[in-house]
Structures are given as structure tokens and as C-alpha cells.
Length: 342
Image (cartoon, rainbow, N blue to C red; front, top):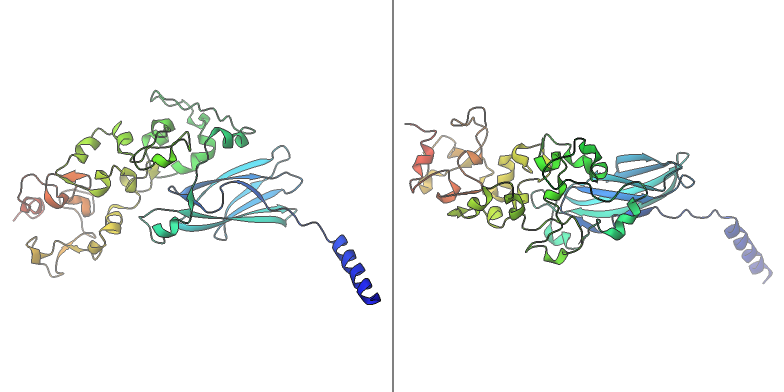
């Protein structure tokens, strides 16, 4: 009995002398198991200079951002780029180079155009929105959350002064930027409206974009309505989902495409990815030593300075010709004669 008593005293002594376990990082945004349809996720983190002097954000164990904690601030935000599929993002607090606490978020970037994405898996993650009046209260210590975005199609002289710029400027670091994004006329598209495909999100964000987005795009691009009325239409255009192929903010590819043209087309039309097309057996084209017509790797005879690719023969938005061929009338051979003069 005496031995048991001594053991209990030792346990109490050890526990009493143990250091207090540091609390986990206070990640205000995003919530765990969130799903994204865009490649950017903004992290909002609460901490104080007393707790930490450095915040390190890693995506899949690779350092994405390092933030210095300041005595006068308690809230920090940083937008990081997500890869398609599952992303494990960790936020660590350090004090005097020592790890104080760490917390993870598991996020999913759903884009059907890239490998590693499974729509069924994505159902385990919830689409969430940040921009409503209640959540924005957290930002007001550093940001004026009252929008100053122009709605008259005239950009501010200094676009860095717009409400959205401070947090979202990273999304336009691309070779080609869409005019509304480049001029920070965000409300031209993010007007808070909903469409047939996102009715369930009504009121979730004051900057919601209607899905399908074609009507929004058509307010500037007056060709959209005509494309949707084409005799032969393309699925994404018919659905009004321009953003399936185009990134509405910008891209390193031409026409703000999410991939280069050949890779984009063969993502869905995988049977053309062999590089050979227009099979002679079905009556199109002439036999070649390679057994078909190339779809890339050649210069385009009718478009000087461009490489041969799918859009040289097909109109991805719609056509009066079968197979979306760039033709008029019913004779497909006319398309061939654009290059093959003999």
C-alpha cells in the first residue's frame, strides 16, 4: 500500500511539473475538408506575437509561404495555389525558431481537366464560401471590406487600391489576363447572382457567379449567343460553361485556356491523343506512311506562325459543319482543300 502511495505522489509531481501543451493553430479559414473549383485558397490565421514570431504554410510538405508575426496584428491572411485533387496544407507557428504548434487542412481542388481528380472523391469535400458580412468581420482589422470596385466599366487609376487586390492579386500573375480581372472590375462577373446549376448556393456569398456562366460572358462577348445556336454545338458551349475550357481570370495559355489547345481537347477526346486522326478507313483524308493525319507537331499551312492543332480544322465553339469542322455547306473535303491544294 505504501508503494502505491509513493507511485501516486510521483505521478502527481510529474504531471504538475509538465509544460502546458500549446494550443493548435487557430485557422479561421478554410475549414477542413473544403472543396474548391478554383486553384486559390485563402488562409486566415489568428495568432499573437506573444505566441509566435513566424507562420509557415506548407502544401504537401513544400513551403508555400512564410509570414512574419507583428506585435500590432493578431490576424494574418495568405492565398496559396492548390494542385488538382487532394491537398494537405499545414500551418505551423514558430517562436525563436522553435515549433510552437501545427495544424493541417485537407482541401480538394476539383477540375475535371487534370489528372488526380475524381468527382466521386470530391463529394467527400464541401464547397464553402467566405464572403458574407459575418465572416468578413474578421478582416476589418486590416481591410476595408466595403467594396469600391467600379460598376461603370471604368477601372480605378490605381487598381492596387481596389478592395479585392490585397488578397487576390496572385490570381492574375499570368502571361495572359482577362480584361475584367486585369482591371479589377470583379463585380462585372461576381455579381452575387446564381444560375440553374448553383441554385443551392443562393445567398452563400455576395460575390457568387451564376452557373452556367454563359449569360455573364455574353454580356461582353456578343458571339456567345450565336455559338449556342450553332447547328452543331460543342458540349461545354451548349451547357453554357465557358469556364470549363477558359480560366476567366487569366492563364499562361492563349485565349485564357486552362491547357494548351491540343492537351485541352485530348483531355476529353482521349482517342485523338495518339497524334493521328482523320482515319482513311472512314473516308476522310488520304493514307500516309504513318496511317493517318497528324494532330500536332507540324506547322499549320493556313495559319502562318502557328502549330497544327485541333482548332485549325474544328471550331470549338460551334459550326454549321459536322464534327465542328470549319466549313460551310455539306462537303467536308472543302476543309481538306484549305491545306491540300492538289
